[in-house]
Amino acid sequence: MGHSSIQAARIAETLVVKPLKERIEDLALFGGTPAFPQKVHVGRPNIGDRSRLMARIGDLLDRRWLSNQGPYVQELETRLAEMLGVRNCIAVANGTLALEIAIRAAGLADEVIVPSFTFIATAHALEWQKIKPVFCDIDPHTHSLDPRQVERCITPRTAGIIGVHIWGEPCATVELSEIAQRHGLKLLFDASHAFGCGHRGKMIGGFGEAEVFSFHATKFFNTFEGGAIATNNDELAGRIRLMKNFGFVGYDDVAYIGTNGKMSEIAAAMGLTGLESLDEFVAVNRRNYDLYRQGLCGLPGVRLFPVAEDERRNFQYIVLEVDQEQAVISRDLLVRLLHAENILARRYFYPGCHRMEPYRSQAHHGGLELPATDHVCARVIVLPTGTSVSAGDIESICGVMRLALTHAPEIVRRVPA
Ligand code: T4K
Image 1 (cartoon, protein in one colour):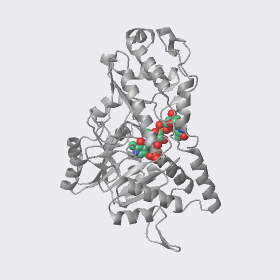
Image 2 (cartoon, helix red, strand yellow):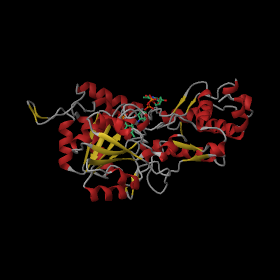
Image 3 (cartoon, protein in one colour):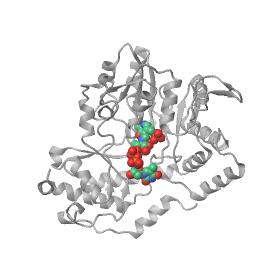
Image 4 (spheres, helix red, strand yellow):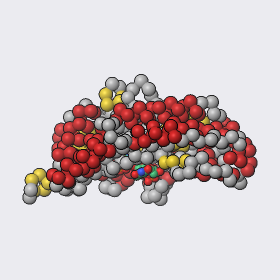
């Protein structure tokens, strides 16, 4: 096997032993040396076997076939469809375009119900084509659409629902399907986080009318930039294939409006290479998740968002909820403290789409109250994981968290509000 980021992570583990911080003065926020000399990111890409990737890049250059449904894109689509157990999987240039195309091809219009607790692209993919995203509250335990709230958002103008499998945990697919059927609505899923995850004995990809993946660099599986639409509906797949290629049905004929959503050959080469290392990516993420679980166990006011371990998971997101009352320290101060240590923890998806432009200012969203979304947005911290993060890194990160949480009252006293 060639040089891979996984091997690099293992080597790093054996070489670097960082002294753990013990006193509050050791914290970088109070003048101590940062726990990491360089920034540790959430979302560092997983990279498979470099020599396999370079060989594929050599091939595509030799072939002089760089885009437009070339052999690597075709092979990737076949492999993905097999893996996901779906009839069609269409590779797209990125997840946002994939959402836009799926929405358009499925005929969504007027109003579509979506969570506000998601990456802004889920909402923008609708608004971009003048469809109103109707923001619905989530279940604070699952972080995804609350089916009871979905029912309340339905109006005569509602055309569909887009559920988001946030953090790779499937949303309430059964309840949402029942609601969609009862009201004659289209149901799509934004599965950007859920590549490689299972649900009720099937792979995510086969639920609803279509499911959309992101293969962005920061995702569990990446094609640099990329995405895909999975569907068992052949007619819909046909429309999607045309729409991603300007609507062309032949050299000189266009059937309807389309866009340029094509994945490039180099992106597909990255994808084919990444697929060969998926098991290793999961194994490292799984190890990291277990280390965080042990390292954060018993800390006051901090809860690790649970991953359902009886189904296939990619363990791509280490999500914490901070309860300020119990932790004493606020989520935001904790993030500030971690950033000072060069641990670039993220507040995904604060403050919620409905609190960002253009939605915040739009009259129809004025006064919108989503208490569970606000509650979760105020508590979530996402920590670094993936193949670039070693066991030693996690020990250091947990050490900083432990120090911060066990000295929280003193830290809060010393930091002006
Ligand atoms: N729906 C959902 C639910 C999504 O989460 C996303 C994307 C989409 C739809 C849309 O799919 P795409 O159109 O993106 O395929 C990042 C990603 O850019 C975005 O893809 C992802 N969700 C979102 C959750 O995270 P930002 O704004 O956090 O990006 P940024 O630049 O801050 O990068 C995140 C971290 O990753 C940084 O700390 C640096 C690190 N990084 C990033 C890149 C690109 C690297 O270490 N190497 C890299 O190459 O959005």
